[in-house]
Length: 259
Image 1 (cartoon, one colour):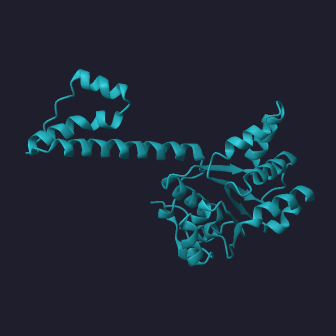
Image 2 (tube, rainbow, N blue to C red):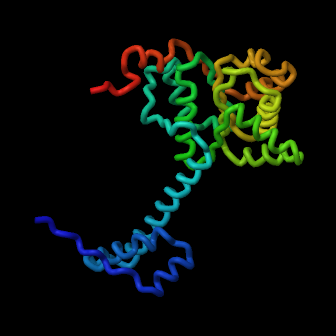
Image 3 (cartoon, rainbow, N blue to C red):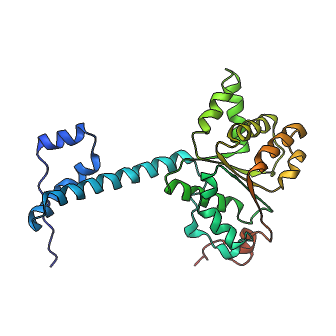
């Protein structure tokens, strides 16, 4: 026979109202249980206060992290929990150094280029999640979404303001450059973003092309100006090898076997 833990008595209406007015939702949620435990174990008043404040701070941290994750717009939710560093052609010391995020603090850039399926997007997304967990703001874009942003704001001449709002993030990721020819609006958006972020924010880029080949997919003048600013303070990682996705598919590891 299981013994049910008695439900702690609710807070007094006046105390509940005060906590609501002071916007302390996490204390309000945990206070009944904490106070019941404090009475049973005869805690000192200072200990009760400490436990309640720790709960409030931890709850706010969780809420802030969830808000930053939602705002980042990550494509798949991949983190380093699912990352196998041994499968990546990026040297292990380089992976470890990038994961410290010290380069973000120095407002340096990161360019990861190489064939499809070699872990570029997953690595950048995992870095983005690490940054969010560390309290930094991240914004995730594709070239297409940058082009849409430019077109939407060109009508009222507010492109500069839109780019400035993006720069509220500490780390801005532009994913999958080089898969398709770049529309003029997207090329302009990439240049504007890189130019505005230069020495102010960190930009991380994944590309099937080395940046020296960007003039193959976008106007040469814009490509030159973009790459010049992007690479000036950048870490360049070139991935090599076969597609991990293709290897998993051909060995039957891409799906759960049918029964």
